[in-house]
Image (cartoon, rainbow over all chains, first blue to last red; front, side):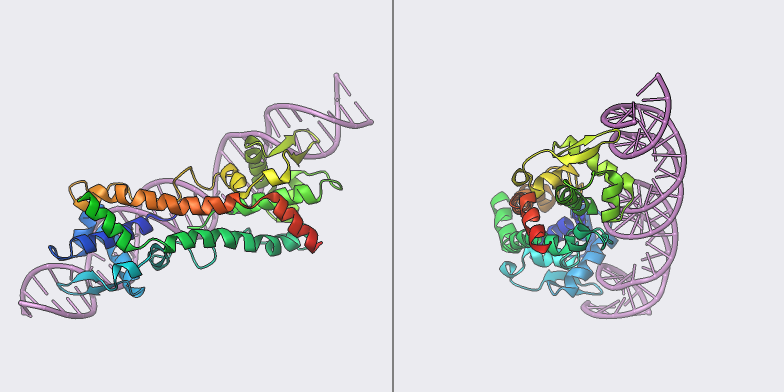
Length: 142
Length: 142
DNA sequence: ATTGTTGTAACTACAATCGTTACATCTGAT
DNA sequence: ATCAGATGTAACGATTGTAGTTACAACAAT
Protein backbone atom coordinates (compact mmCIF):
# COMPACT_ATOMS: atom_id res chain seq x y z
CA UNK A 1 0.00 0.00 0.00
CA UNK A 2 1.19 3.44 -0.84
CA UNK A 3 2.12 6.28 1.46
CA UNK A 4 -0.71 8.83 1.41
CA UNK A 5 -0.57 11.76 -0.98
CA UNK A 6 -0.94 13.90 2.14
CA UNK A 7 2.84 13.72 2.30
CA UNK A 8 3.54 15.01 -1.21
CA UNK A 9 0.78 17.59 -0.83
CA UNK A 10 2.36 18.83 2.39
CA UNK A 11 5.75 19.16 0.70
CA UNK A 12 4.08 21.02 -2.15
CA UNK A 13 2.36 23.34 0.32
CA UNK A 14 5.60 24.15 2.11
CA UNK A 15 7.34 24.75 -1.21
CA UNK A 16 4.66 27.23 -2.21
CA UNK A 17 4.84 28.94 1.15
CA UNK A 18 8.54 29.50 0.67
CA UNK A 19 8.55 30.44 -3.01
CA UNK A 20 5.62 32.85 -2.79
CA UNK A 21 6.14 34.26 0.69
CA UNK A 22 7.17 37.69 -0.64
CA UNK A 23 4.53 38.13 -3.30
CA UNK A 24 1.32 36.52 -2.12
CA UNK A 25 -0.69 35.98 1.00
CA UNK A 26 -0.62 32.25 1.64
CA UNK A 27 -4.21 31.10 2.13
CA UNK A 28 -5.70 27.66 1.85
CA UNK A 29 -7.42 28.73 -1.36
CA UNK A 30 -4.15 29.90 -2.82
CA UNK A 31 -2.42 26.63 -1.98
CA UNK A 32 -5.41 24.61 -3.14
CA UNK A 33 -5.23 26.16 -6.57
CA UNK A 34 -1.54 25.36 -7.05
CA UNK A 35 -1.99 21.80 -5.84
CA UNK A 36 -5.40 21.34 -7.39
CA UNK A 37 -7.23 19.86 -4.46
CA UNK A 38 -10.08 21.00 -2.27
CA UNK A 39 -9.21 23.79 0.20
CA UNK A 40 -10.55 21.72 3.10
CA UNK A 41 -7.86 19.13 2.48
CA UNK A 42 -5.30 21.92 2.65
CA UNK A 43 -6.74 23.26 5.89
CA UNK A 44 -6.51 19.89 7.57
CA UNK A 45 -2.88 19.62 6.57
CA UNK A 46 -2.20 23.21 7.65
CA UNK A 47 -3.51 22.23 11.08
CA UNK A 48 -1.28 19.19 11.26
CA UNK A 49 1.80 21.11 10.14
CA UNK A 50 0.98 23.79 12.69
CA UNK A 51 0.54 21.25 15.48
CA UNK A 52 3.97 19.89 14.59
CA UNK A 53 5.45 23.37 14.95
CA UNK A 54 6.57 23.59 11.33
CA UNK A 55 4.41 26.54 10.36
CA UNK A 56 2.34 29.33 11.83
CA UNK A 57 -1.21 29.91 10.70
CA UNK A 58 -3.18 33.04 11.41
CA UNK A 59 -6.92 33.04 11.46
CA UNK A 60 -9.01 35.76 10.00
CA UNK A 61 -7.49 37.49 6.99
CA UNK A 62 -4.28 35.83 7.91
CA UNK A 63 -2.03 33.61 5.95
CA UNK A 64 0.47 30.94 6.81
CA UNK A 65 4.24 30.98 7.03
CA UNK A 66 7.05 28.61 7.75
CA UNK A 67 8.14 28.76 11.38
CA UNK A 68 11.70 27.47 11.26
CA UNK A 69 14.83 27.74 9.13
CA UNK A 70 14.39 25.65 6.00
CA UNK A 71 17.36 23.41 6.72
CA UNK A 72 15.82 22.46 10.05
CA UNK A 73 12.67 21.03 8.47
CA UNK A 74 13.32 17.53 7.19
CA UNK A 75 11.09 15.31 5.10
CA UNK A 76 10.84 13.09 8.17
CA UNK A 77 9.36 15.98 10.16
CA UNK A 78 6.73 16.45 7.47
CA UNK A 79 6.09 12.72 7.15
CA UNK A 80 5.53 12.45 10.90
CA UNK A 81 3.43 15.62 10.99
CA UNK A 82 0.84 14.38 8.52
CA UNK A 83 0.94 10.96 10.17
CA UNK A 84 1.27 8.73 7.20
CA UNK A 85 2.14 5.96 9.66
CA UNK A 86 2.23 5.65 13.42
CA UNK A 87 5.61 5.34 15.06
CA UNK A 88 7.24 1.97 14.41
CA UNK A 89 4.39 0.48 12.44
CA UNK A 90 5.39 0.83 8.82
CA UNK A 91 4.72 -2.87 8.43
CA UNK A 92 1.34 -4.27 9.34
CA UNK A 93 1.97 -7.44 11.31
CA UNK A 94 -0.66 -10.18 11.21
CA UNK A 95 -2.45 -10.16 14.52
CA UNK A 96 -2.61 -13.57 16.15
CA UNK A 97 0.12 -16.02 15.24
CA UNK A 98 -0.49 -19.41 16.82
CA UNK A 99 1.38 -19.52 20.14
CA UNK A 100 1.31 -23.31 20.11
CA UNK A 101 3.44 -23.40 16.99
CA UNK A 102 7.18 -22.85 17.49
CA UNK A 103 7.28 -20.55 14.48
CA UNK A 104 4.14 -18.65 15.44
CA UNK A 105 5.40 -18.26 18.97
CA UNK A 106 8.74 -16.77 17.91
CA UNK A 107 7.93 -14.95 14.70
CA UNK A 108 7.76 -11.57 16.40
CA UNK A 109 11.02 -12.07 18.25
CA UNK A 110 12.75 -13.00 15.01
CA UNK A 111 11.13 -10.56 12.63
CA UNK A 112 10.52 -7.35 14.55
CA UNK A 113 14.11 -6.13 14.59
CA UNK A 114 14.49 -6.76 10.87
CA UNK A 115 11.36 -4.79 10.03
CA UNK A 116 12.61 -2.00 12.25
CA UNK A 117 15.91 -1.94 10.37
CA UNK A 118 14.00 -1.39 7.13
CA UNK A 119 11.86 1.32 8.61
CA UNK A 120 14.91 3.03 10.09
CA UNK A 121 16.69 2.97 6.75
CA UNK A 122 13.73 4.70 5.19
CA UNK A 123 13.39 7.27 7.94
CA UNK A 124 17.11 7.99 7.92
CA UNK A 125 16.84 8.89 4.26
CA UNK A 126 13.74 11.00 4.90
CA UNK A 127 15.64 12.81 7.63
CA UNK A 128 18.52 13.58 5.28
CA UNK A 129 16.39 15.71 2.95
CA UNK A 130 15.28 19.19 3.99
CA UNK A 131 13.16 22.00 2.64
CA UNK A 132 16.40 23.85 1.92
CA UNK A 133 17.13 21.17 -0.69
CA UNK A 134 13.72 21.76 -2.22
CA UNK A 135 14.29 25.51 -2.33
CA UNK A 136 17.69 25.12 -3.96
CA UNK A 137 16.26 22.86 -6.65
CA UNK A 138 13.34 25.18 -7.30
CA UNK A 139 15.70 28.09 -7.73
CA UNK A 140 17.59 26.15 -10.37
CA UNK A 141 14.33 25.62 -12.25
CA UNK A 142 12.96 29.12 -11.98
CA UNK B 1 -0.64 3.89 5.24
CA UNK B 2 0.91 0.64 6.30
CA UNK B 3 2.51 -2.03 4.19
CA UNK B 4 0.07 -4.91 3.91
CA UNK B 5 0.29 -7.81 6.33
CA UNK B 6 0.63 -9.94 3.22
CA UNK B 7 4.33 -9.28 3.55
CA UNK B 8 4.74 -10.50 7.15
CA UNK B 9 2.42 -13.40 6.44
CA UNK B 10 4.55 -14.42 3.47
CA UNK B 11 7.70 -14.30 5.59
CA UNK B 12 5.94 -16.38 8.23
CA UNK B 13 4.87 -18.90 5.58
CA UNK B 14 8.40 -19.26 4.23
CA UNK B 15 9.75 -19.64 7.75
CA UNK B 16 7.32 -22.46 8.44
CA UNK B 17 8.16 -24.12 5.15
CA UNK B 18 11.81 -24.18 6.12
CA UNK B 19 11.46 -25.12 9.78
CA UNK B 20 8.93 -27.90 9.22
CA UNK B 21 10.08 -29.23 5.86
CA UNK B 22 11.38 -32.49 7.37
CA UNK B 23 8.48 -33.28 9.64
CA UNK B 24 5.26 -32.09 8.05
CA UNK B 25 3.63 -31.80 4.70
CA UNK B 26 3.28 -28.09 4.03
CA UNK B 27 -0.34 -27.43 3.08
CA UNK B 28 -2.30 -24.22 3.10
CA UNK B 29 -4.26 -25.52 6.09
CA UNK B 30 -1.07 -26.25 7.96
CA UNK B 31 0.30 -22.78 7.30
CA UNK B 32 -3.06 -21.19 8.04
CA UNK B 33 -3.12 -22.70 11.50
CA UNK B 34 0.35 -21.44 12.43
CA UNK B 35 -0.41 -17.96 11.13
CA UNK B 36 -4.02 -17.95 12.22
CA UNK B 37 -5.63 -16.70 9.06
CA UNK B 38 -8.01 -18.19 6.55
CA UNK B 39 -6.48 -20.83 4.25
CA UNK B 40 -7.68 -18.95 1.17
CA UNK B 41 -5.45 -16.03 2.08
CA UNK B 42 -2.56 -18.47 2.29
CA UNK B 43 -3.36 -19.98 -1.09
CA UNK B 44 -3.35 -16.61 -2.80
CA UNK B 45 0.03 -15.86 -1.32
CA UNK B 46 1.30 -19.31 -2.25
CA UNK B 47 0.34 -18.53 -5.83
CA UNK B 48 2.15 -15.22 -5.77
CA UNK B 49 5.29 -16.71 -4.24
CA UNK B 50 5.16 -19.47 -6.83
CA UNK B 51 4.76 -17.00 -9.70
CA UNK B 52 7.83 -15.19 -8.40
CA UNK B 53 9.79 -18.44 -8.52
CA UNK B 54 10.44 -18.51 -4.78
CA UNK B 55 8.59 -21.75 -4.05
CA UNK B 56 7.11 -24.78 -5.74
CA UNK B 57 3.56 -25.81 -5.08
CA UNK B 58 2.14 -29.19 -6.01
CA UNK B 59 -1.56 -29.67 -6.51
CA UNK B 60 -3.45 -32.66 -5.31
CA UNK B 61 -2.11 -34.14 -2.09
CA UNK B 62 0.92 -32.05 -2.67
CA UNK B 63 2.65 -29.63 -0.43
CA UNK B 64 4.85 -26.62 -0.97
CA UNK B 65 8.58 -26.17 -0.73
CA UNK B 66 11.13 -23.44 -1.12
CA UNK B 67 12.68 -23.45 -4.58
CA UNK B 68 16.00 -21.70 -4.03
CA UNK B 69 18.84 -21.56 -1.52
CA UNK B 70 17.73 -19.55 1.50
CA UNK B 71 20.44 -16.95 1.13
CA UNK B 72 19.22 -16.20 -2.39
CA UNK B 73 15.74 -15.20 -1.23
CA UNK B 74 15.76 -11.64 0.07
CA UNK B 75 13.01 -9.73 1.85
CA UNK B 76 12.86 -7.56 -1.26
CA UNK B 77 12.04 -10.61 -3.38
CA UNK B 78 9.17 -11.44 -1.05
CA UNK B 79 8.01 -7.83 -0.86
CA UNK B 80 7.90 -7.64 -4.63
CA UNK B 81 6.28 -11.04 -4.96
CA UNK B 82 3.25 -10.17 -2.86
CA UNK B 83 3.11 -6.76 -4.54
CA UNK B 84 2.74 -4.52 -1.59
CA UNK B 85 3.52 -1.64 -3.93
CA UNK B 86 4.02 -1.27 -7.66
CA UNK B 87 7.52 -0.52 -8.85
CA UNK B 88 8.60 3.04 -8.00
CA UNK B 89 5.36 4.14 -6.44
CA UNK B 90 5.92 3.89 -2.72
CA UNK B 91 4.71 7.47 -2.46
CA UNK B 92 1.32 8.43 -3.78
CA UNK B 93 1.76 11.69 -5.69
CA UNK B 94 -1.22 14.05 -5.93
CA UNK B 95 -2.55 13.83 -9.44
CA UNK B 96 -2.93 17.22 -11.08
CA UNK B 97 -0.70 20.00 -9.84
CA UNK B 98 -1.52 23.31 -11.50
CA UNK B 99 0.70 23.71 -14.57
CA UNK B 100 0.15 27.45 -14.55
CA UNK B 101 1.83 27.75 -11.18
CA UNK B 102 5.65 27.71 -11.18
CA UNK B 103 5.66 25.40 -8.19
CA UNK B 104 2.94 23.12 -9.53
CA UNK B 105 4.68 22.95 -12.88
CA UNK B 106 8.02 21.91 -11.39
CA UNK B 107 7.06 19.96 -8.31
CA UNK B 108 7.55 16.59 -10.01
CA UNK B 109 10.94 17.55 -11.44
CA UNK B 110 12.11 18.66 -8.01
CA UNK B 111 10.53 15.99 -5.84
CA UNK B 112 10.60 12.73 -7.80
CA UNK B 113 14.29 12.01 -7.38
CA UNK B 114 14.11 12.64 -3.66
CA UNK B 115 11.20 10.26 -3.20
CA UNK B 116 13.08 7.68 -5.22
CA UNK B 117 16.09 8.04 -2.94
CA UNK B 118 13.88 7.21 0.03
CA UNK B 119 12.32 4.24 -1.70
CA UNK B 120 15.75 2.98 -2.76
CA UNK B 121 17.05 3.24 0.79
CA UNK B 122 14.18 1.12 1.97
CA UNK B 123 14.56 -1.45 -0.78
CA UNK B 124 18.30 -1.65 -0.28
CA UNK B 125 17.69 -2.63 3.33
CA UNK B 126 15.01 -5.14 2.32
CA UNK B 127 17.47 -6.66 -0.12
CA UNK B 128 20.10 -7.06 2.58
CA UNK B 129 17.99 -9.45 4.66
CA UNK B 130 17.49 -13.05 3.52
CA UNK B 131 15.61 -16.13 4.64
CA UNK B 132 18.95 -17.52 5.77
CA UNK B 133 18.99 -14.79 8.43
CA UNK B 134 15.51 -15.84 9.51
CA UNK B 135 16.56 -19.48 9.75
CA UNK B 136 19.64 -18.65 11.79
CA UNK B 137 17.59 -16.61 14.24
CA UNK B 138 14.94 -19.30 14.57
CA UNK B 139 17.61 -21.88 15.34
CA UNK B 140 18.87 -19.70 18.16
CA UNK B 141 15.34 -19.60 19.60
CA UNK B 142 14.48 -23.30 19.23
C1' DA C 1 -19.65 45.47 12.30
C1' DT C 2 -17.98 43.55 8.16
C1' DT C 3 -15.14 40.70 5.61
C1' DG C 4 -12.04 37.11 4.69
C1' DT C 5 -10.24 33.21 6.35
C1' DT C 6 -9.42 29.18 9.30
C1' DG C 7 -11.33 25.18 11.87
C1' DT C 8 -14.24 21.42 11.80
C1' DA C 9 -18.30 18.43 11.41
C1' DA C 10 -20.95 15.59 8.43
C1' DC C 11 -21.59 13.18 4.44
C1' DT C 12 -20.47 10.65 0.10
C1' DA C 13 -17.70 7.91 -3.11
C1' DC C 14 -14.22 4.89 -3.84
C1' DA C 15 -10.52 1.55 -3.28
C1' DA C 16 -7.88 -1.90 -0.68
C1' DT C 17 -7.57 -5.21 2.88
C1' DC C 18 -9.05 -9.03 5.05
C1' DG C 19 -12.13 -12.73 5.85
C1' DT C 20 -15.41 -16.27 4.35
C1' DT C 21 -18.10 -19.75 1.65
C1' DA C 22 -18.39 -22.48 -2.21
C1' DC C 23 -16.87 -25.21 -5.71
C1' DA C 24 -14.19 -26.55 -9.83
C1' DT C 25 -9.77 -28.61 -10.80
C1' DC C 26 -5.94 -31.30 -10.40
C1' DT C 27 -2.84 -35.17 -8.72
C1' DG C 28 -0.97 -38.99 -6.20
C1' DA C 29 -2.27 -43.25 -4.07
C1' DT C 30 -5.00 -47.03 -3.57
C1' DA D 1 -10.20 -45.64 -12.72
C1' DT D 2 -11.63 -43.88 -8.75
C1' DC D 3 -11.17 -41.30 -4.70
C1' DA D 4 -9.39 -38.41 -1.25
C1' DG D 5 -6.75 -34.45 -0.37
C1' DA D 6 -5.18 -30.45 -1.97
C1' DT D 7 -4.83 -26.20 -4.70
C1' DG D 8 -6.96 -22.43 -7.57
C1' DT D 9 -10.32 -19.08 -7.89
C1' DA D 10 -14.73 -16.66 -8.07
C1' DA D 11 -17.97 -14.14 -5.51
C1' DC D 12 -19.42 -11.97 -1.52
C1' DG D 13 -19.35 -8.89 2.66
C1' DA D 14 -17.36 -6.16 6.44
C1' DT D 15 -14.24 -2.84 7.61
C1' DT D 16 -11.05 0.80 7.07
C1' DG D 17 -8.56 4.67 4.96
C1' DT D 18 -8.37 8.09 1.42
C1' DA D 19 -10.09 11.80 -0.85
C1' DG D 20 -13.59 15.11 -2.08
C1' DT D 21 -17.54 18.17 -1.03
C1' DT D 22 -20.90 21.23 1.35
C1' DA D 23 -21.98 23.85 5.14
C1' DC D 24 -21.27 26.68 8.81
C1' DA D 25 -19.29 28.29 13.28
C1' DA D 26 -15.30 30.85 15.13
C1' DC D 27 -12.07 34.22 14.79
C1' DA D 28 -9.11 38.39 13.70
C1' DA D 29 -7.85 42.50 11.14
C1' DT D 30 -9.59 46.38 9.01
